[in-house]
Length: 452
Image (cartoon, rainbow, N blue to C red; front, side, top):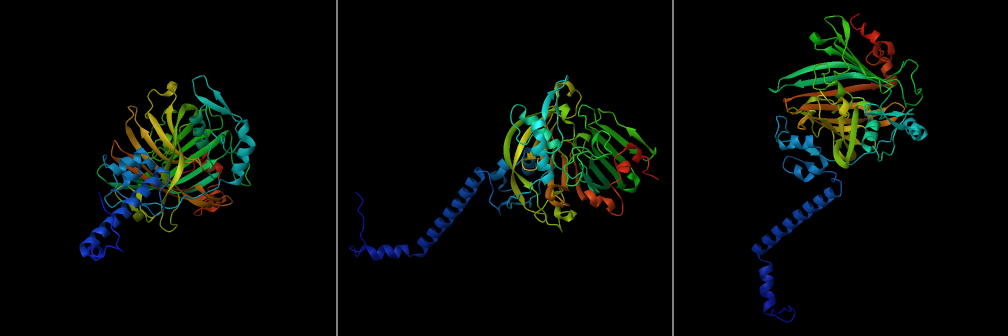
């Protein structure tokens, strides 16, 4: 039997026990137990917080604790933490987590979604692919659900809001397996000509001529590569293959690439033609099937210090990945889809699948993991859409303030790029040049003017 002690009545026991409680050894042990309990409580608290789908602002993720947060990471990000490939985060790597931000889509895009989305219908093509009829502007499927939920999400990505005109200088760093770095700079002019959702703009540009979207990039550096240009048209008729033209300075003329050359690199980078739009998906929605895998909260970088985001020294030099000097990461809810060529067009295609993470608020891609035909991880492509003020539209993740890196995990090279853009009417006199000229930057005839 255990006898309880009443210190008020047991005068002999009370002083001796109080003495032992006050001894230095006992106090030190008690302090250790207390500190251990606090650490344990904090650890459990952080774990519970993570299990609930969030990470506490102020959390610092490192190589020592990253596995506590792996549920918030795409496979490619986990691979960079693990260090099993040539490309890996350095020992001093840190990700600082901040609060999650909200960036409402432009009013015109939301209004067009409400007005026109109910008319969008899916139609099956003879080759087994899918297309849509009745699309005008805005988000085609504002609440993607089964059937064909994954493909509806892919269509929403394809028609996600971007300013109707984006111009600017894009810097590229190309790193080989020996860590040799070369530099390129290009002028980029991306233009939406149909399905426009910007205030004060027509839904269809009078000069569209059946083109939905045009992508133009011309190298200006280094001098030996100057004038090399890539121009691609995506048509409003989704069943019409895209057209890509490559201007060759040595020939002083342009060549039309085969419609099957979608795996060819763009101006010598690690981006294929099918990767060009923000580094995630540029393949044409009728050629691909998509399966919804899950909804997942992942770490995304959307805010940046305006003075520091585009400084090379603020990237980890080994992997060209943002350091905490650029900004804090946040947890954002994503759709995760598995995108593959339809069976009728899969033979000879370079990729087996793409796992794309799309931000559920903006429908922009946040990360893409690309697999070869044997379904081994081939490329990992984080896309940091850093929110930027778009004139007349407010702060947008689609401001094309972008940090993108394409890691080739199998061939041990990478391409990292930063885009410093202007938007819409800003392009009228961006850097002293009028990039609003459709004939010069969104037509084949404009390629003939490059070296004049």
